[in-house]
Figure (tube, rainbow, N blue to C red):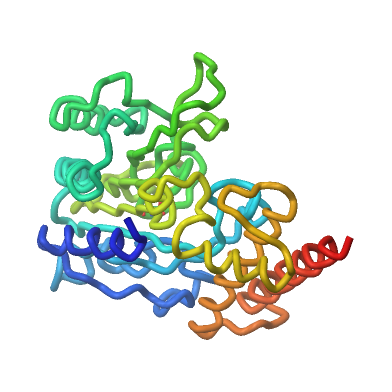
Length: 324
Ligand code: SER
């Protein structure tokens, strides 16, 4: 299935379930000077999460996101991107865990036609409600439900003990099992062997964290979900690297052409990694500049400059090797 079709099926599915289709915010956040770049679908809904806007209580988006915390992994690992699209459905004091979990499962099985035997889920270790919804309502076998701590299954990660203060909550993640992997008896979706790919994070935003890690229940509970579009496309297109999906492959191949290299799906050697990085950073830079973040010495402009520099260095390295 093409990436464009996944995007439209997702948005249509949630519109059908009463969500307002809201456009992606700019990568340069419209109403949040505290953020360098928009990094998640929920960024544009801070006011709604605090209950300040009341004309709609359900939204769905495909949000342009920029995250550079893992920039060194781009090209090396299957799914690190600096720019990516995040599909999301949101509830502002409207539906909660039961519907969010039920609709996620329905979408994956009925719209994406995924085999449930390949799906695993995780819940926050103290969230028995989510565990029971997966086990009893949805019928996920208990050997496909994993309990993890606050570093894996809380949003923001580790919020109860480390902060920041503000709205937060336990989350539940959905993973696709590719098989293989390390084969260890301890292997689970959290394993670094990459047998499992996380495709969707359902955040149950139910607390307002205050000083000292005090979690005060919110008067109105919210849902914030994020599905990685490129990850889902890789699953649907049967490729292990996000850079090999239909949206990315032509850009990687264009980088190969310019540097007089060849690129075939799955190439992971040094040149393959560089070509993927060039493609990824080029796309990121194009998206950032289209939203008004121009190369500069400071702030978000510095991020853009750094991306260009990294891609250029990879380009000159990849092009030099072809000579020999
Ligand atoms: N905000 C959560 C995330 O970024 C879910 O959308 O994963």
